[in-house]
Image 1 (cartoon, helix red, strand yellow):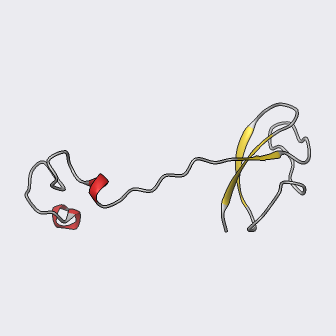
Image 2 (cartoon, helix red, strand yellow):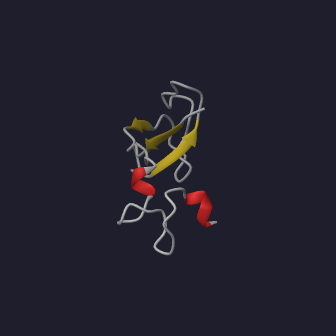
Length: 73
């Protein structure tokens, strides 16, 4: 089930909700003021690759030379 972001039409409160796929917000209400049918808004998406999780020198930790982060734990 995806997490969608919504914005209230009345008070402009932004909130997230774990919903069924394709939820439009027609059956929801604002948790702050109670106004029904909030607008679903576009959410930002971020995914990290293994390379972006490494240190600036390309290794996983500053104190070791292993390319595998699990070796440092």
